[in-house]
Image (cartoon, rainbow, N blue to C red; front, side, top):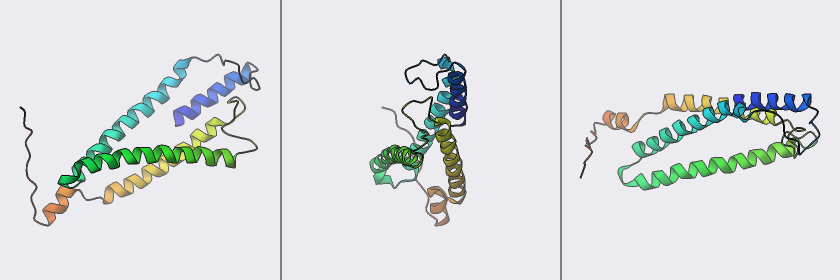
Length: 157
């Protein structure tokens, strides 16, 4: 989100320097490659997050509930997208007179929205770190109770 905010600030400066601030159909003379860092960071971050989250759900769920855990994983993704829509609506309502998300992006302050997402991401990271440090994995919980998990070896047919 930091990369997106900085790219948006750069885009607005280029639009302003070429007198395109109030022209909603103008094409800002900025290379598309300015978007590369944010797409690489967000794309790789989501890939690692989704893989880790799905692995967590499959590893920690009870044996007969693997399908349910996959459904729960997909439900958390859809809930996240739903909450993103609500966040956009709230930001649009709160910043009504000087909108961050204006119809003409050159007149809006989209970079402020990206900074807000940065702050929310840092808060989310803090909550995750606290939760992760206090979480006890299923293997350890069961071992403390004297229950040993079966070693399952992969079978190839």
